[in-house]
Amino acid sequence: MPRNRLVILCIFLTFNCTLSAQNETRPAVDTQWHRFPNGRMAGYTKPRSFGFLTQVPGDAGHIAAVPFKKQSLGPLIAITGTTVLLIFADQTISDGIVKFSDEIDLHASEEYKNLISLHAGKKEISLLKAPLNLNTAIYQLGQGFPSLLIGAGLFTFGKINHNYRALNTASQLAESFILMGVGTQILKRISGRESPSDATRPGGAWHFLPAFKDFQQHTPKYDAFPSGHLATMMSSVTVLADNYPELKWIRPVGYSLTGLLGYSMINNKVHWISDYPMALALGYICAKQVSIHNRKVIDDPYSRKRTTNLSLTFQYAFGEFLPGLKYSF
Image (tube, rainbow, N blue to C red):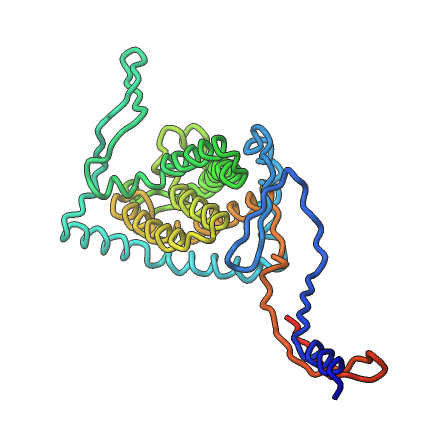
């Protein structure tokens, strides 16, 4: 074979590498994109001022419509069925938890020490207090302060670093906190269920649609169902986990703390266990709705698994067909 033909043949026998990717619409310059481990991307824009307030009516409307959607029928049946079954076991479970807690010296009393307080006449208003026992510390997790503290930290970080993801997550935590307060209060004032501490019969009585004055003056007699503490905790964990999925510890730690919170509230006779399924569902749904409003999630075009292919090709050159190897990925 002539020398020039040999050179040409060697060239065609080398790998011809080709790389193809789908065309992608470029995001707006004011959108910050974050790649998630699940092959998705989330785009965050700078949140609007007081968006966590202005979006509440719209998101509340979407949440109220969820039970009437066809895809919600299965979960709704599961939540209702679980609640009904647990109602029959409420008193037995409550008595068992209280007895076990006494045996391990997990004190049910709520004990605090005021760290920062404000005096208004003869009345002292606590601004910051520290729990004095373990059960109280766990119970405090669901009172909203830890969630607001995390939100404040994310807001500060986002402002300093111009990080839209942190700013939007803080906004979501604030909005979900408001939605939890409004949603649980509506359900409490409809159901009127007695707390274990004020129960007049095993499992507590239900006083549907109690008078506003009665509810305000004797709150523990009417506000057990559902648990606002657990709904807030579930919502906060879901918001954080959805926006920072690369932090794998958020869900297991968050769910563990949620379980401990649920235990402590039964121990100090604030809630029955059947108050929890609806609270967990409400917290989860609210978190998902505020997440939808505050970010855009798309498939990551560069996360697809690439396949390689090696094939023999023939190309016409210099008056004859020459063999070559084509490597694509």
